[in-house]
Amino acid sequence: MTAGEKNDDAYKTIGEVTKELGLIDKKTGSLQTYTLRYWEKEFKQIKPLIRAGKRRYYSQKDLKIIKLIKFLLKDKGLTIKGVKKILQNSKALNLDDDIDLGVNSSNLKTTKSIKDRVKKISKIIKELKDYS
Image (cartoon, rainbow, N blue to C red; front, side):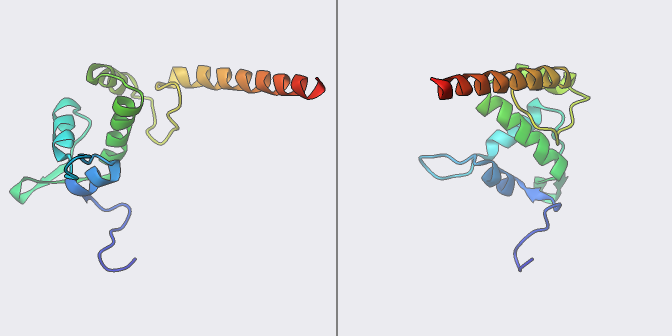
């Protein structure tokens, strides 16, 4: 580790988290830190350490939750209300698990089963094309 680099498990500032998530205004290039502050109000699972001067420091656990929230909101197109339901109803969901097409633990088994069937069907179609 060189000077200026942080340990991976070190707390991160709001600016560092915003950069890591790519929450940057495309026109001005400024960081959208207000997005994280808004998410803190909406999602009780985000609990940054707040020090003197109201500076926020996010743990790795906070960062995982924030990444999940961003994924569900921005990539999957869920609403704030929908993400809240998922976070409240997925106590068994391990944030280290892959979030694929399903988001709660009961859907993960179904999703894997569907993916396996699609792979088998694709393989059969490819074999049929090879014989034609």
